[in-house]
Length: 310
Image 1: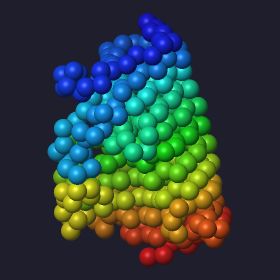
Image 2: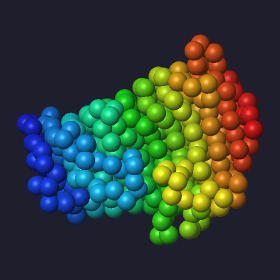
Image 3: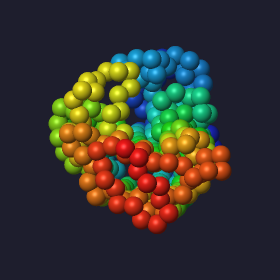
Image 4: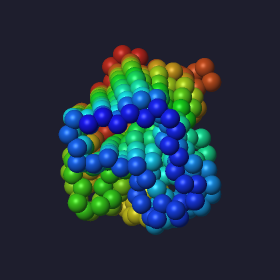
């Protein structure tokens, strides 16, 4: 089955007209499906963003996303643009072997909670040759996700490429095998980030992450592991995260940082990170090489890489 869209499809401006639907465009339970064309799905989110208070309270009312891709197998989304979603642009759930190719996402930096592509409980997801500009995470990887490849993607603006946040809920599943290669992050709040909540109700392992050949342009936190992630102070930082992070490689990371500290690895005091490699990381801040800060991790340093300051 192929759906081709070459025009513009607009969501209602008023969020109430969507009647609480989690996504206003959904494709699900399909095998060998293709969504193609040069069309635009416009969420017309600008008016709705003013009603969004999710930066102030964690239990805020969720607005409608542009796309939901649920339980798709062996499918392709190519050439399409997602514009100005009221909430996340794309949610991928329960999918296997799905490719996003030449996919574009467009929303201003000031748009709240407009994550680009969020992936959860899915496997073999590929995002290639795409441009994602949002007011939140460019791409976020949720629990239960395995074998994701992100290749030749530009994020600008947004909060970068994130694994997590993980560990908030008791029924979560491990995250394994992520490859991010030949990507550019331009004026994003974060670059490559892994984040877990402290005081997690369950323990599991996240492993086999490979970040390589990444260009940073004025990125605030280019490389960051944050196992004390706690927005809105809705957690107990006295209890360390139980999520075990292992087998992570950051290799050939270059460009400019918006802060002096280009690498921040804050791992869990209860389950320290293991097998973390920093290789050929050269980032500058105001023309001077950036520093690195590490806690509860002893990374392997290779090539031109800053020493970890504890």
